[in-house]
Length: 241
Image (cartoon, rainbow, N blue to C red):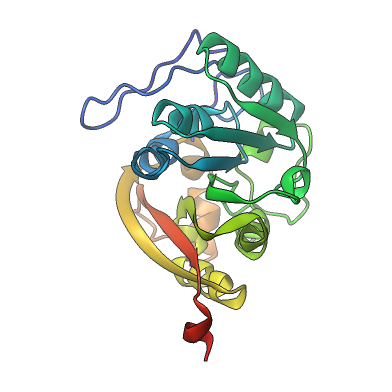
C-alpha cells in the first residue's frame, strides 16, 4: 500500500490494459492500489443502471468507476476531510456527477437504499485498536485484528441495501475471509468470495511483515498477499427457515 502526495492526475491501468478514471490524491488520501483495481473490475460489471454507494471512498475512484460504467446515481462517503475534498475535486475534473458526503460509514445515507454498495475499508492489522484520526495510516489501519472497520461494514450494509441489492467489498486474506462471511451471515446476508488475486506486498505490509509473522498471520518469507472480493446479498426469508 503506497502513499504519495498530490498525484498529477494519476490514471491507473488494469491488468488487461483497461484505463480507469484518473484521480488526484491529496496528502493523507488513499491512492488507487491493487485492491482498488480488483474491486473496480466488479463494480464495472454491476453498476450500469444502478444506484451506487461507495463507502470509504478515498479519492472517489470506485464512485467514478461506477459512474463511468453507467450508474444512475452515485453517492461517495468518507470520514476524512481530505478524502472528501479529493473525491469532490475528482468529480469536477472528470466531469462526473457524484454526491460526496462526509460522515462515518452509512450514517450520512441511513435514510436511503442503494442497488450496489461498494467498499475498500482499512483492513491492515495494526498494533493498537485505537485508530488514527489525522495521519495517513487512517487509510489502512484496521486495529489489531484488521477488522474494526470491516466488521462494521458487514454489520451495517443491509440497512442501506435495496431488497435485491448487493454489497461488494475487498480485503486481504490476512484479515480472515471466513470471519467476513460469518459476520455477513450474522446480519442477514449471504456472502461469497467472487474474486482472488495475489499481489506483492506494498510498503505498509512490508514494514509490518515481522510483526505480522510474530502474530502468526504471515509466514517468515512471505512477500505476497492474497486479496479477495466478497459479495454480499440479502438472504431470502425462506433461507432463514
